[in-house]
Picture 1 (cartoon, rainbow, N blue to C red):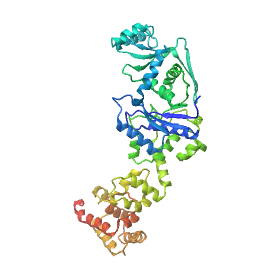
Picture 2: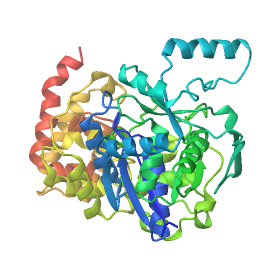
Picture 3: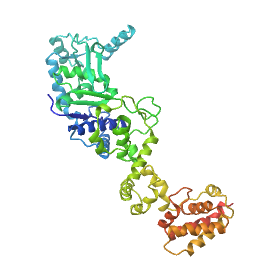
Length: 475
């Protein structure tokens, strides 16, 4: 018997870490932590033509960024080819597997006949009855081959008790003698994962329901190798926003790297995964990874697929941002904004933008005017509907120069409320003109607090710059 809970995640390094892979990883990780077990990381890299070390690096870094740390591994399937070869040879020797020399053309003819006869498309078993002498002769002649599992005649229905769905059954007659090894010595997926699971003492196989159809094939391989069969659980995958098919690149960002670059927090992504796939305690919406580890219940996984909702994810990310202290948010922004021109200035600005951003990336367009001169757009100025804008700017400049330094936001605001009244301007229009002059935008963090941070020298330079350029706008 296997001792303790042991689960695994086995991504293929044929692309960056996908949301769906991270989603499944989370629940394997949580189950291991909740049960006091072990979480194993394997890399399914037997497809050397498509596997890429850069993708593996991305997967590992992505899991670490999310905080989903493993206890053992990563183990690479490409390093375990001798194990698969040994297991297949044992099966051949015991008569539970056999060499198949059928060509692709022969198999295609079989398939066509089955289709025409409206019969299930399974291998006919043509090479099942080859004698040892016939096999030896073909091997000596270097005839191309694969190794097939011999499904026992009369095996009947393959049943397993899914921990979420209950009993699921498949007719073994519809599975046929599946290929488990290529002649090159590279195993097929179902054989490799079973040999790995046996050697690594995996107790629970927890994964998306797109693998349900693989489960009876894997059970037959476990049986052939006289190994304990792990427990299985399958849950729905994340669906596209339109609920048509599992989340894909068709209309969405799908890699963890995409979301990381877009300014989402790892805490948010894990929390959102939990909302999609698991009924959380007391239906709470905000939950930390530590709380998940302490309360996760596999039996409460959702059995209906949830659609990905970007608005919900952004809302949740904003909630996490607002939960940070100013110092915590400053640190996250400094880490995120790798090439920012003035990281030390971020701390001053954080209190002004914390309630206004949903993603770390929102900081950039909202605050870029602090760090570089703005571009002015005549169309924006026209929206103010102020006559003699240049004259009003001169009045604003004169008032600014008369203010005691350093400027204070409170005094600044009152001064320009009074000026607006003197000039018979709506206060909003006056403030917006100042906003455009210092930032080039109609929307910024709180205006006078921003000017206080920007400072009198830069602010006056920008007012002057707009005055000098205004004639060209007014033509």
